[in-house]
Image (cartoon, rainbow, N blue to C red; front, side, top):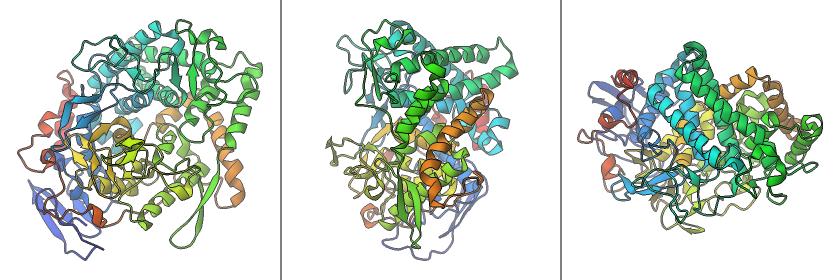
Length: 624
């Protein structure tokens, strides 16, 4: 339990929480009331960040997370911090090409961004997150709703969003011209071009066109299916919002011309995807990696340029399903009888064998049915961020049960957070010291061995945010409150389960998936686009049919229930395990992330453009 934070000494209970009297902190005219189970603020604003307090998580301890004003105030503070990553040129993306960087390291002592420690490659999955955030930022108030619209000034302003979208599409069009075999999709790539030896250029070198990366393998003649399913649906979300703005501003407006360029991208991907990723007639399998023989042959020309990959396929019911859905609903199947109806049915028939039911015993002794995970890492639920899975009552109930199991497991084991695939803190071995821990999750609920559950990560809470925002935000805040898990650029990658260090790294996956979930994801945008193309029924049929075939028989779920019914998930512990307690009288913050007026954080919100006067005006209004 935290009873005082940024403007006083941090005091954490050494064991189970005791009863604390109400403490009232009045800071610069803003009242903050803290008690064991409630917190009230006069306004839902990014007040703590506005007062140069980047270690704001401790201010929200003991909050009433069911209060929407508390939720909005917390999200506003998160967005103000995270903008120093996701809206920051030369930190999260290249200002000339508009393409994302994979991430950047912090100084492990001060917590400040280390400009010389850029992870100078990227992947389609990183692009999918930024494209999704850009799409959400361009929504109208009517599309977003009043609550979300009030937060959008802290995402991207219109000018910055349109500039970024224009730079990205120009970079992608240039890549398509030079590498037509990629079919509008992307390999892992060098955002600023490559050196003569094939390695990626850094920010201090001249910018060139994006190139296939050679970071941990050569991507010059192959590309991943999973990541490209993510970016494909992000392009759909961008098109939906650009077309809506174009309808308001006219056929020759800036947004209309930009919408047309993204439609052309989507058309190229649709024309290419089956040739690239389907293993051929009668196979019923989708390639996890598409490999080609000649980079100069356009992917849409035919399947002959692509290599059979029968042993490495996307048949999972997790993130890889996004590529399968894109191929099924939007791919060009003209080379197959009946528009590929039998091939598509065979894909889903084979895929469905990998959807398995598992069970979890709740604290009251009740057994609930859940979808078995691969590792049961939160990362596996990425598809719910981008596609309208949670519109389907049965699917929402199954996914809600999964989050009940995930959170109750952490509570029962007194784990200081949630497991998801992430980079480990120094001294923790996942393949190597501080390596990437893919096999992080919950063994009892996994299909394979979970041997890398060595760190918790804030983005592990994103699926819970989509099911129950109050609980998801509370768990996210709990992990931010761990020692040195906040920086002037927002959340860090991970904290060791045993309390022995953090990974001082900022990445798109481990940071901005959470932001995307706080904003509701892009499911509603993609649903509107599907509705306009008469694809919603097919999406519903494929997804519901797959889950109903496995879960219908248990009698636990209402197949015709209401997907809008609220689900209540458990809140985190009200204390930290002894491994994560601070005993030196500090608040567990980096020197660069204290809470005093000498740190002018808000004065340097990144990414604002001098042309974007309306955005700056709204930001000032928001903080005032």
